[in-house]
Length: 111
Length: 121
Image (cartoon, rainbow over all chains, first blue to last red; front, side, top):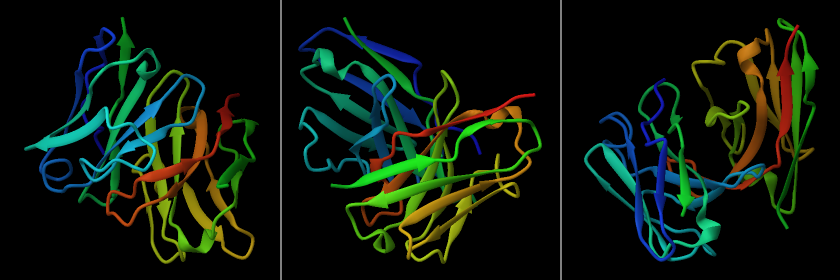
């Protein structure tokens, strides 16, 4: 299966807002509201930040939000903080036989 | 508290088999579906396999289909990944993860710390 497409890197200054895109097809991102976002710091396990496009798990800062338009989902982080610097991955349900697919990941740098 | 502890990783030659385990504690294991997800050194996350809470359904990534088998023993609170015919490209940290929400996106709310598998001659 093909991975979802994410930008390799994004950057922003403290206090700013950034958005990370995740582009798929009508068989995954565009066809269903089952996109999740994970944050991963170096050497650590991933952490769930958003599920079902825009739902935030308990304990996740409301600076993190998710949305979707057509075949592209987005993770927006507002009020950037140094601790947000990490890799971010999207995943989606897919109607293919494999059921789930991840994006290639985006490295967020806080300048 | 929820804990997932992977074990069974190591260095193996191509073609050899290996079985990974994931010991779960702090929750009712038999109520939750589970994933295996891997990450090659310096690379992104790759979903490997999923198993329903009762073992009734299993799905695999194309890259491992026919070689890997996911299973679980709900009496032992343990998830397994049997990996056969290992290849160099299977070299990765393997994570087990709990599916925490009733969603067809199968989002994972808890992850283990991973176990490293290196396939090399």
